[in-house]
Image (cartoon, rainbow, N blue to C red; front, side, top):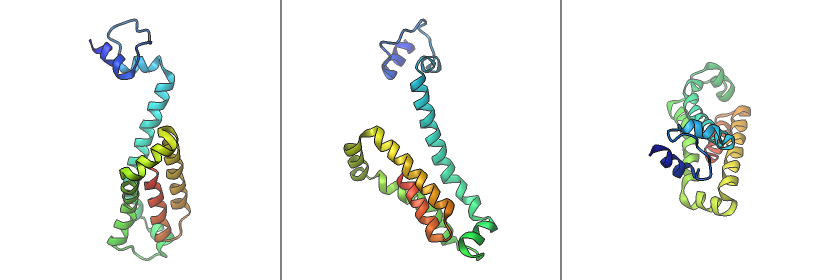
Amino acid sequence: SESSGLRDVFHLSDLRLEEDDMTVFEILAQQPRSLLVASFAALGGFLFGLDTGYIGPVLEMSSFERDIHGGKTLSPGTKGFITGSFSIGCVITSVPVISGWCMDQFGRRRTIILGACIFGCGGLVQDVSNSVAEMCIGRLISGFGT
């Protein structure tokens, strides 16, 4: 049955299920910690998508060009590098030699926490940046954290 499959997937053999046809949400409601972890994971995915998507409109803002590039128009190549530097950071830290080493050294939980802290530090660098180079470094650091 479907509920026994859910028990296997969520390792819920010790959980008491009154009905055989409980939904995933009902099961998670019985385990608030799992619901909290799932919510934070979903928030992480949301923030990744937000960080990837928000930069396009920001690059077109005259106030951004004024603050970052002295009011001069950014070239398409510069805009592309600002946008892509986040993905470059993601690719670098996703290489198995790097990600595997972090997992071996710190464990999965601490690696995720470290990544979140690095992501936040990158956001802070982007927030206080006054030049294209600083903005790219901030986006690269944020990419390292994902």
